[in-house]
Image (cartoon, rainbow, N blue to C red):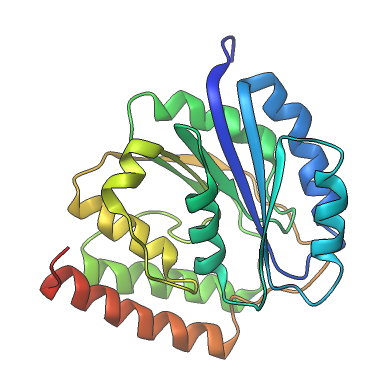
Length: 237
């Protein structure tokens, strides 16, 4: 990438990631400095019960471009993304998960695609998750095709880039949980936005636990998908 983008908003959702948060943020800072003239990193703490928020606030004190948004209670992945979108001020927005499983330097590949797209979504070349999450991902692809009519390689990949003017066409989001990714894509499809896919690396989680296979998370996702389907087919928006 030879030319920097004028401005970039980045956000990371964190929940009980005290062992990952400092590494994730500090790895991103030199990269974003090379790709954007102006930038911000938004740290979204989703009601962590460990030292995630404490560490985030400590890091933010060292750099005015780092902003912390905190939920008083754990609300869910969708709520964390919604807070990130609400806080982002620049015309280009990228988010990736705060668990350290993505290589943020690969954001360069998103810039190549976003010029002729509204949204660029990553798909993992090789997914390092437990087998249950692999099964759930495939079930989600089928579910979203049946209910919402779209089919992408990796719907719930937590590495996506959006133009802010495209985002404004699909707001507001209602999902508080994992169904947020389906909501983004379903509303983008309805708005006839151009979505491009790009391959990304995925690495094994070093610290912390995954929550995507949790029964409570799955049941909320199913409930939210029915609400989304009803809103898209019978709602005013």
